[in-house]
Image (cartoon, rainbow over all chains, first blue to last red; front, top):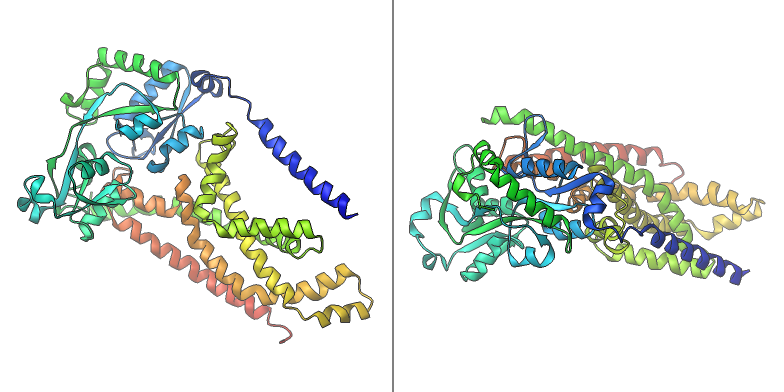
Length: 264
Length: 228
């Protein structure tokens, strides 16, 4: 009786494992075929103006969102936007819970190593943000060596802190980095130029913060799964969108200065 | 935008987030309360392999962070089996969270149940046998009846903890209330750079756990039959 029960338990376990394995047999499709087959391009974003954000009706708009909609239309698939935890972007891609990351993503080594990335399409910079009343005392990198910086973990900002030899604390996201500065737990933060324009100053909770120096200049790109054939298709699309003036028009709509657009 | 213009927009977003929090809380309880009993019965089974298997599973679930379990359950089907069963949207993320929470809480509940069952004096089972009751009669009418009232205080503890633990699901981007509150720091619905919505969510948790405490106290009083 005992042996019988034991065999029964093992059989049930074996069947469970086998049936789980049997489900996963869509591996031979290319990434383009896979997206085409399911009919939806899932775009991973983080809700940040002016790239991807919601209008009053809850519709996703923004420079990146509008471009992504046009790209999906060209592929002949639906587009759906999915907000993700930024630190998990490569996990989300590889786990096929999203199909691309299109969210003002800085092309750095980490991104290039983990994804198949498009040609750069927008320029950006990492900037230092600190309280207005002390900003004058820190005009350059050398004067900032003693400050404690808050940076988004695994971001271009963290990289800049390292390169410049700043003391830094990694935090969940750029918004949290600002929270650290305004609560005084850190002296300054390093965030994206585009983001700093929307998040600090007049009318925000960070009216006392200001943007000081630019630490680098960098480029935005779009990321797909490693080895994806969608990257090529997107590069072609970007060229078309640049040539016919779609990009310039979008930049105007969303208040992005025209000289940040990169020629394709 | 002034504070008074922001307020209704923020409240609406927080309400939507809190609805997800409440849904996850309710689904977890509905799933974990009975599943916990099943697991606790397996963990005191006289069939040794089943008992060991169950206790190993309990050890693994209680021995790893719930945040990690959420990520394993949501991402592994796509990563390992190349088949993202949960899909990308909010519904899929909700059910993945629900499965992780149900399983995790069922394991904690099962140990509380086990304590409750083993705390009923053996003499009572013997008394049942003497009276000619069957094993299932003894379990349901003697043991389980007294177990329930014994486990209410420790269960209340876990249930209140569950209310707040639901915020962990944001790691797989379930847009619960903490997510909704912190989204205004970056920018959402035209409001950006605002800190207060995040801290305002605390009031929601306080109100709800207050309500639960009252309810659980009432249940405890109701069950205070036969003082041991």
